[in-house]
Length: 480
Image 1 (cartoon, rainbow, N blue to C red):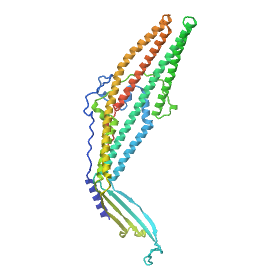
Image 2: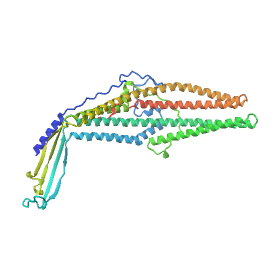
Image 3: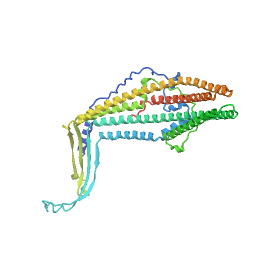
Image 4: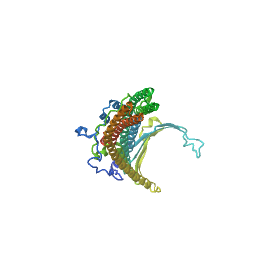
């Protein structure tokens, strides 16, 4: 028995190790931008000569904004966000599948001990009293072994497919983390923008109250008409309404940030911090590096490799399956004779099976696998092209908004000057209050637009970081 088991194990190992792998070898799909230019079409307006250490983003990319509160929030998001925990659990689930598939390379061994009694029925057909069993014990100690030789690489390709899916899940985890981090940063700058707008409107309400006081005194003194008072009241109430509307926006952003860091909104608050940060320099690197820096591109490429493995698995179904089995053990009617050599029972041998007709099922599965590979390849190329577009889009936004911000500053300064002039002319009795109202409205609109442009520049900076991969690199994928 021992020699037979050793011979079976040796034959199994030899066959398993000598098996080939059917199906195509993987070749990474070519992206139209693979021959990328030396630089992006658009340029970062904040570009400056950089030290070698500044040529790429780091994992804690948010520190370039020099916002301690944002850094604290980002750390809390990484530790407590529930969506991120779900993505991490999905990665561990995919990693466990590697072990499940790898188990197919080894025999499955089991045992099922049995102790029982056995007695023949005296009323059964063709009963013979001389050979009847009037009751005896049956003790069994069986051992089973089964193994499928991986002749055509089906099991190994299943293992490889699980590895590729695990790497894709790891990239998905990084991409989910990057998306949450950038969403948090955008919400934070939106909140700061609301604080800046709220401060502007609060100051405006104070100015308009003073204007209403002056207008009311002039009306009571018989200098101006009552219509000027109503116009001043209208301006004041309109500003108060705008101030309340901004408070609603700020509350919503604060609640969104609370959920991102895993806290209930009721127990979370952020101090009033008007937006004053300007967009920092963001190292973009070379376009040719983008394919290695984006986790979503890495995930798409790994799933393309996985789809290639599925083709090999489908092709292996066209070839014979060789399996080995062993059923043996000890059986006796008494415990004291169970371990005698005469109690040994076994059955072993190889089985070669081949399907000759399945009505086209295997062919259809193979065609399905090839189609899935083509789909994954197209998705990979599209993901890469979209990544290039997102980088160029946000570079263009930063460049254009930088120029627009300077132009807006000049417009705001001019509107403030005009407002002061018309206010002085009104007090001097030269102009009507309608001209003051028009100047006030124009000045407030320009001041709010100043804040809005800065907000859009900060959002574009964060989105550019996301488009560049947030300092990640495909070399950080887990290796198996």
